[in-house]
Length: 121
Image (cartoon, rainbow, N blue to C red; front, top):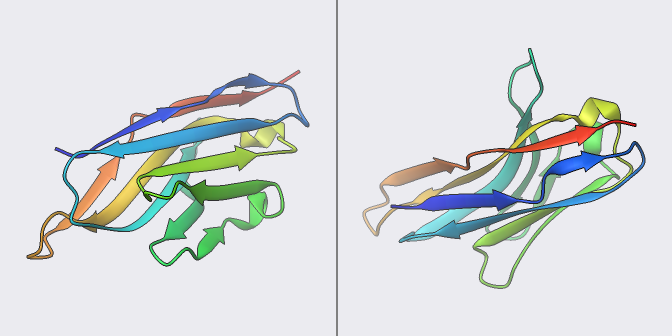
């Protein structure tokens, strides 16, 4: 059973910073990509940032230049450094992993439980 454990959310003032972490555990044959999504009240879940196996990254236009996604050397933990936070960044942030469960390439997608980020004065 693959699990994602997130941490790092909280309350921060506009202009402040937070760092989210997401650690994957369990048996995974290959991780294709890990990323962060967010869902604000009354809105659809949206992609925030993605890092794929080769190291390329992708960001939503709304966070480019402010957020940075990275991972550890083992490639099983991803981080989201969020700077210059705005009230509109307030949302539940979810970690996501996509990859293969085994050598037969059975696809695997896992979501974390979510961590709340509130940007408010």
